[in-house]
Image (cartoon, rainbow, N blue to C red; front, side):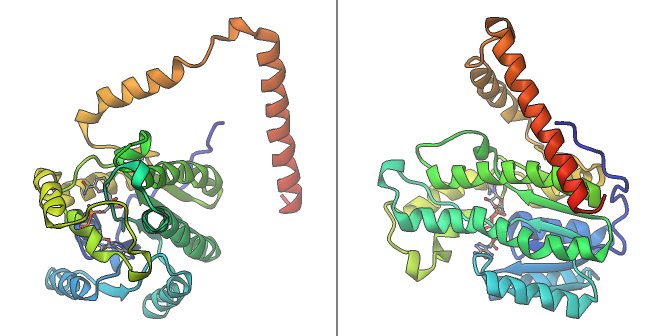
Amino acid sequence: MRIKAIGRLMRDLSGQLAFITGGASGAGLGQARVFGRAGAKICIADIRSDAIGRAVAKLKAEGIEVHGLQFDIMDRTAYAKAADEVEAVFGMPPTIVSNTAGVNSFGPIEHTTFDDFDWLIGVNLGGVVNGCVTFIPRMIASGRPGHIVTVSSIGGFQGSALAGPYAAAKAATINLMEGYRQGLAKYDIGVSVCTPANINSNIAEASKLRPAHLAASGYVEDAQAIASLQSIHQHGMDPDQLAQTILEGIRANAAYIIPYPEVREGLEKRFAQILSAVPSVETDPDGSKCRSDALRNWVAGRARALSRNEGG
Ligand SMILES: NC(=O)c1ccc[n+]([C@@H]2O[C@H](COP(=O)([O-])OP(=O)(O)OC[C@H]3O[C@@H](n4cnc5c(N)ncnc54)[C@H](O)[C@@H]3O)[C@@H](O)[C@H]2O)c1
């Protein structure tokens, strides 16, 4: 399906208000710095109040106008209260929403418990859903052009026997952003998804953020596991460098932001493998045409019905 280009690209960040989850650390804090230096007002939302305090102090020291909000993005009531607070403080809803907060945990997929699923999918997918459902109606009502960006993961393009729930949640956020991108263009709200491969961040310590009611894990999350993850992430991309590419992606309304050349070969193999399962049209030209026509007619009919309902 062709996506209508949005009318007004968000080239200038001055006057914008960016709401960034996970903004107290890593990729979120990088965006707070980079977007703030580009002239945006910043709201950082995070579950850790101590880290928010440190981040807010650093950002203010740079002259960035910033407000910190402590809550768990899995908590919908808290999310709605945070959105009200943003509007009370800044007099407007955010024009940029960055769903960046995320957690990971690794272990054999066959040992994954309900708590592992509920926490990893709850934060990495549920938190993004909560951000979108909370803010998008407010952004549309404001009538201002806007942008939603979600930090997913390159892991979202491929299932993983060691990161089952994380990869599934990240796959879902890529898909969700593709859907919102189609749906929000008519409101001049751009949508991007960023799929990093490795960031120099604190994510190795994410298991420390697990809520007590979701503590029954099938994975080993001890000091050794944290140290082994840190040995990878210390070589990750600098968060400010990643944030700069995210900013360029917002300015261009890029669908995908993937500034990691080393992932190209893997993605090529992955998509070639998927395409190899699809026969050519010549193997069933009539059936193929009949099904495609039916789908095209249904989509066109739905679009007409929706436009009638909206009075368009
Ligand atoms: N680090 C990597 O290599 C890497 C790779 C691919 C994708 N990512 C993604 O990048 C995003 C940012 O992670 P990062 O690497 O900067 O890690 P990070 O741990 O440095 O930052 C994540 C922040 O999210 C916050 N957070 C966690 N759970 C939360 C919750 N329930 N509610 C509110 N805030 C919460 C944490 O307190 C932390 O400050 C995540 O979505 C992660 O999955 C990271």
